[in-house]
Amino acid sequence: MLARAQGDGDGCTYHPGIARWPIKTSVPTGSQAANPLPIPLQQFISLPNLIIPHHQISYFQDKRLPAVANFPYQEGQIVSTTGYLQWAKCEIDDNDYHVQLSLNPRGQGGCLIVEVPAPQFTDPALAPRVQAVRQFIRQNFFGGAVPHGKPHMSTRVEVVGQLFFDAPHLTQIAHEGPGGGRGSGHCDANSLWEIHPILAIRLASSPQPTPPPH
Image 1 (cartoon, rainbow, N blue to C red):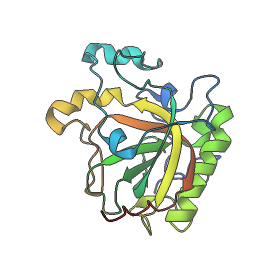
Image 2 (tube, helix red, strand yellow):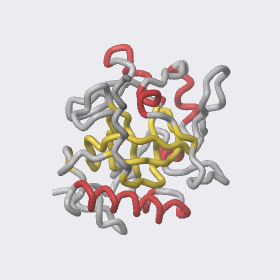
Image 3 (cartoon, helix red, strand yellow):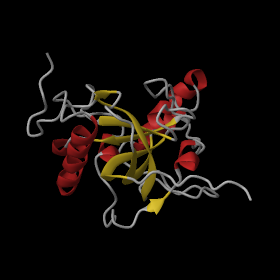
């Protein structure tokens, strides 16, 4: 049986991650979670992947990607988006809560992957934030239990965190599509862009219905 992570009490393994782990567990100095750049979920899901030669991916293990000409966003920006929390699971390879947001409760149209690491693995300044996010997910969607797949209900949430590009999965897109084969519960990712780490999460109001044409 897998033991829960020490100092956390809400995890599924003792092990931190490896791939780009220094980036996944920190944010740039001076980042302000209170002033995120909003990205509509439909746009976020469809963001094109960056092109990085495979032999250069390891160079960015502990470095954020630089700005790219004619691309509106940059890794490390604090951004927000809103969607249905369609799936969440504690990953045994790194103790992250892997969360999927979708445009509708059934996950049709693809998913955005957003992740929150365990507090003991993050920059200490972020530990209270990520701990609160993990507690929110457990209490609101899994009856207090560690996330294990489909939530008790699929409700819209607003998520705030670091824009992150999961570059190591570029090696998989030729065979598994632009999302690198990521995604669970019949909801595939269409891009390697994520929010990671999540710094804040809240329940969002339902979208207003489109008025009928006159």
